[in-house]
Length: 237
Image (cartoon, rainbow, N blue to C red; front, side, top):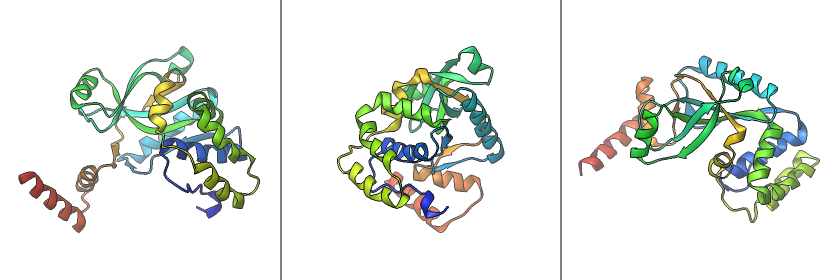
């Protein structure tokens, strides 16, 4: 990727700031764009099936310009470290595209609650999001108006070389904010869910999941063996 296509944050202020900074760059260049956000630390065993789901989400987003689509996968066990979604039937126009509507979010529930969610057929949220740029803007502006107003200065940037200076000024007094908790959890009526089926999804945000994924793929790394030995010793103590 060419450097001019990157949006580099001057500081880490949580996922909401990161989403908003990149979103407004896109809106500045193409306000009618349909876009997707992909977490960088996830793994899929079935890339082809995953991308087929992404293509389907893009097609649905082109038809329903007011909705954001979250991609989900079936839950396999009571994982307390994941975000869970309880979904319900969507309005007829969305359900014809295989979409569901968010009923409620659970962000990293207790193991007991995760077990209950598993029994109820709830799904894991992959945090892959697809929708029109306008739909994302409307969600954030409605749930975080003060933050959005602060970031609006990015819409006035005329040259890419001027953006870093504007970003530094915008980020000076911005507090950490989580996109999922502050925006998604409060906007379920505007969010559809597309369940991908079993694509072999794993969130690699924890070392143990990285080690487990490497093991399943038959990849052996010296540092992984060292990590396993250290943690096995710690558990034994």
